[in-house]
Every structure is written in structure tokens, then in C-alpha cells.
Image 1 (cartoon, helix red, strand yellow):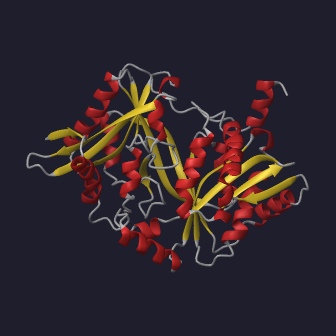
Image 2 (cartoon, helix red, strand yellow):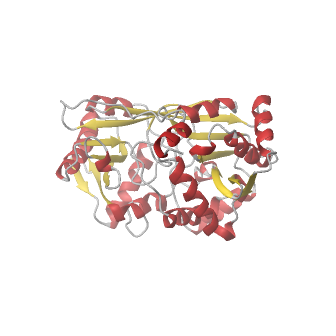
Image 3 (cartoon, helix red, strand yellow):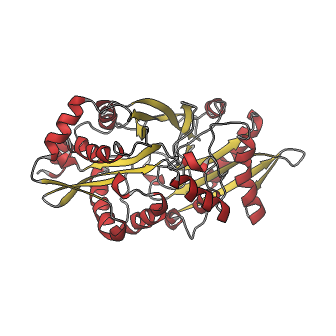
Length: 399
């Protein structure tokens, strides 16, 4: 076998094509847009290169046939916040051959070790964790847009190599052909009627305002997550603009208390329903097909990418109210049948409880693994976010 670092245009194409080879006969797989994957490894597009680095490789057998790929990366904003400096590996694809899989993993470990890393997480993304994060171990159906998908045999590869489960992620599914639970609606409407609260959906002609509102909530609400690092407004504005072609303005909501942003929820149409027909391509014909299929309203599923509430207003019911605002919109669109609430980790019991309260049921399970390079090091799970971060905040700042 021959492992080659990706360094030219031909190898970049091969990196993409390996996935098409692995999933050729899998009816559930959706090929991610080629330009989306390429952008992750382009320093001009991916802002993570400003504070990190990445390498990727392809693997060929003795006949020169493509049989695998992998990438390794370092996010310097987070890598040194762990007990062991920790890098990442992802975009792993491989035929059902343990020797080949281990060669790909060895290559990542060796490069990361040469950069001073003592552990690696995988499979993860060189970017935000709302996309391409975790290994699918349950729910082998069509994935949501940006969500991981892989053959079942990958789990054995990771665990046999020495990865352990760092945290578990679940995506819950909400059947919107059925009404929301009566108790949930009652709480949501009670909160929505309070005069101090107001709600507004995204307006594409004012990304600046909503990017600032997002940052205000995100950097406050996520401060208690393990290894949190604040987001910049430029990153958020760039993300909004990049998502613009698929955004439904009334799927993205912000909540305010006396005009101050306290919560947000971002939901998007699940364009994987269309992307499955395009095989990753983004040429003029693919773009025309995309427009045509959207016009025909083929998309029947939405995905909630992220939602958050500032600690001061947690347990206030604002989570229910903001979901209700989006529900009022999507329930009026008969082509939609399902919403995927993804993903939430086992380190976030509050969000799991919210999913249950809205009537969502388990759809998919993913695992994020960690491999410690020193076998004598103690394997530790991800820390749990306190259920009452409002109380934690009060104790922290004394207010």
C-alpha cells in the first residue's frame, strides 16, 4: 500500500472520489458538495487556518487503486486547553481492511505527534462542530445536511486501534405531522405573551445586526462548555453569507428581553434531499437542478443546527418559546414532515431534556472518540455541563 500526502489538483480530486467509491452501492449516502469539502482545506476559505493547520492523505493499494483517505488537523485555540495537547483526525474513508485503516490512523498520529500533540479526537472536522463531526453508530438512514455518515464497520476500526468514547452525540427527530405536546405549547405561549420578551426572525438584508446578536448569545451561553473559545463576528457574518442560498429567513429566530438578545435558534431546510441527486457536483447543470428541485418543494425535512440561551434566562421557558416561533412557521408549510434536532452531546443534559419535552424521538447516535498516544495516560470522558448554569454564573461573578 502507498500513502500519499495531498499536494496537487489531481490528488485533491482523488481525495473527493474515494468517498464515491466507498459508498457506490449505499442508497442512503449523500455526497457532500465537492466545493464544501475542498473549502475546508483551503486557507483562503477556512478561517481555522488563521489559528491552525491541516494535512490530508490518500491511500492506494498495490495496483494503484484508491482505497482510503484521511485528514489530520490542529486547532490552536483548543488543542492546549486539554490535559494532553490534542489534535484531530477526520474525513476518514476506507475499504473494509483493518491494515489499510490502521495505516491511515498511524499517519495521522505520527504527524500530530511530530507537531507536539499527545492525543487526537476523531472523526471530527477542521471547523465548527455542527458539521462532519462524530462516527455514526445507529440510525443508518439518509443523513441530515452536514451530518456524518459512514459504514458500520468503521466503529470496529476506531475501537480496535485504541480510540475510546470521549462523548456520545444524538440527533433526535420530530414528526411534524403530529401536534406538539399540549404542555409544551402551553408553556411556550405563556412565555411568548410576556411583554418584556420579543422575537424576530433573520432578515438577509441585515446580517450585521443578527451576527452581533448571535455573538452576544453564543459567547455567553457557551462559556461553560468544555474548552470553550469565543467566536468572532467576522466568522459569523461569513457563515451567514455562505449559508444564504439555503436559508429560509423565518427558520432562524432570535429572542430578546427588553431589546437585548438572549436566545437564538438556527434551522435550515435539509438540502440533502436534493444533494443526493447531484453527486457532489456544483457545475451549472447541478445548480439548475438544485433550483428546479427547490421550486418543486421536494425538501420535506429541516434541521435545527444550533440553539442557545444565555445563562441568566435559562429555565425561563424561553427555549420553548423560540422553538414555538419556528414551529408556527414550519407547521404552515405542508411539504415539511420532519425536523432533525441535531446534535446534542451526553455532556449537555439540559438540551436533551428540551428535546424530550418537545416530543422528539431518537433518530441517530454518533460517537466522538479520543486516542491517547501514551497508553499509560488515563482515559477521561468529556465533562458534563452543569444543569443549572444560571446558578453557576451567579456563583462565578457574584451577581
